[in-house]
Image (cartoon, rainbow, N blue to C red; front, side):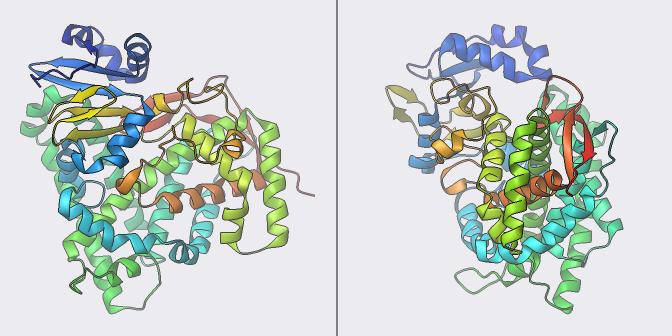
Length: 444
């Protein structure tokens, strides 16, 4: 971008190149230092006339995502790079296609429909939690990764997919995500990924997954209703009365796989890491869930009335937001608070930094779920985005995480094995070396 972004301080491409190695491993310290030095919004020159505006200003984030969202669209990272593998569903679509799909799919995620899925979700996560080995250190992330994928699949398809197909779909989804990380982190190897056949190999995997899903859809159309998400998506109609095409339906399912399992598994792992270091908070969750289950067997009652457990999840998402950057590109020149944002400016909203900004959070690095009791709707909080493109599955994700944490704490006490919580920022903010110990809780 040759045109200057007025009143926004700028860092040189040389500064970027000097730190390229560290950025590749973990970009968060680099950006934190820049925010401390340059202020809440700055421009980073990348060389060859390219630059990106980074911001940890929650007012700017709300303006871009909500107030004037029509002037900002997702970057080619999602609309092209991700879309080539997972299709043009809600996460990767833009413009009129996105509006059309959002309007069509939104009713499927209404709380009344989700209520019907909660028993299926509970059974899926309970089966995965059975795999936890007690009295010895274990890496909890693979278990939560499987748990989250199984939950999405069961919510979508009930029991219509066998374990072999589920394992294959999960393998393909995770293999493609790893390839995406390689492409985004090493754009200078784009030529090699193409001529070596790596891109084509992963595109072939995508076609294999699409074939499995088309078989599931065909069988469902010939078989009995299950009242799961697949049936809701098959029932959905556009304004002209038409249903989704098979290709579009497959796109949306692949998006749910990609977006719906990794973010949840990350958040649940971080929740356990935080709880392991706070036995009093574990006990408070245990007592809340025990009391609620004595009052009701209705899972929707449990997940909505478990106020403290919900605050624990919210605080986990504040400290470790799975989507730690939100990308947008301005369609036309814009102005906010004396700053001019030229047309076609790339903007990265630093959610991780916003969630830990000392001007908006008291003791921002402290794990304190009760801050959400004092302020249940904070302005500087974007775990699911904001505005019209806010994550359509946010309620489903929250219900799933509350049920999972409730089940875990009802069965176990969680014990840390090391002092620090480690992170691995890739496409999402992932946990690293999440080794914990579980002991059976005495419930007598």
